[in-house]
Structure formats: C-alpha cells, structure tokens
Image (spheres, rainbow over the protein chains, first blue to last red):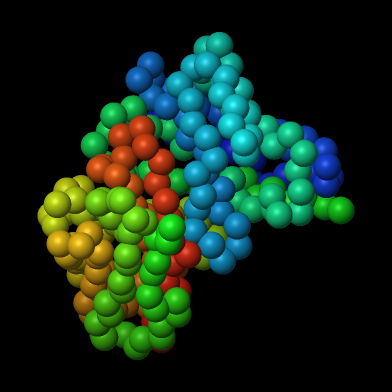
Length: 112
Length: 114
C-alpha cells in the first residue's frame, strides 16, 4: 500500500470549513483513499473514501487531485465535536483483509 | 443496533502474566480484526478472523493469539506480557473481510502492564 503524509496538527475556528490535506504521491491506480477519525477515548470512525472522483456524504467531502497524488478532506462547518485525530489511508480496493495502515494522522483542534 | 463492544474497558497486569480481551462485533458482521494502539501512534493491525480462522496477520509475535466463536465474537490473548504491550487494544468488525467496506471499531480495552 502507498504511504501517506499528513501534517501533524491543524487548528480550525468553529463554524468554518476544515481542510485536511494528505499526500500520497506513490498511489497506484487500484488504490482507494480512505479517511477515518479518532475522537479521544474512542475507536476510529469511518468518514469517507474514494478512488478518483470527488465524494461527499453527510459527514464530509473528499477532493482528490486529477493525478491522484494528493487529497483533501473537507469538514464544511467544523464544530467542537470534530476535534479529533484524522487518518488518511491508502489501500488496494478489494484487498481481502482488514489491515488498514494507519499513520500518525493529523490532530485537528476546533476552537470556539 | 449495538455497535462493536469490547470488554473490559481497562485492565492492569504485571509482566509475565497472560491476558484475554473480548469483542462482540456489530450486528450483521462476521469478520473481526484486532489492532494495537500505542500512546501517540496510529492503530497497528494484529490479525483478522473470519469463519473462525485467522486469515491475515500483522507483524506481531506468536505471544499474540486469538479465537473467533461461532457467534462471530472474538478473543485476543496475549501471553508473557511485556511492558511494551501496554496499549489500547481495538477491535474492528465488518461484513466479510473489508475489501472496500468500512470498518466499525469498538472503544477499546486500555491495557497497562506494570
């Protein structure tokens, strides 16, 4: 699986959009980009995933660059409850295992 | 609909002891994976159980073993505990091995080895 690079920490004002970047320059054509987050004292929570098209769900939007070497997770209106560690993971679609390669992630702090 | 449940939530052991952690998957799920999360790091994959067999294993020694029961629940056993085994142990479940499916995680068991 391709390696990902994320900034260790970011701040965001409550009510503003939080844009979390992820670099995955060695991504292969059959690898998806996944985002999970982990709120303190809880297990990771799935947010969104995509292959090459932009994706949106009730939690967030995922923007993947045309060359697929980087992506951005967007939380459109961050709240204090969005304070968490956000993990960007790249893995092969159809991998017959649950081995998600979590890195250190980005610690997002939403401030009032 | 109950999510992934783990027990106990906290546990304190001493070096050399053995420990058993338990996990019940989300309703409708049949695959369970275990992860270890050291302080300040992301979770690391230990192994995965499907159809009561270990299907995939991460880079963990044989001291780490597991079991899956016919009702899909699972146990993680760690023998000869070391101080370095102190961590949050997370259980994740899915319907079949994940592929493109998302994983659902429990809140974990915090293990402290003294």
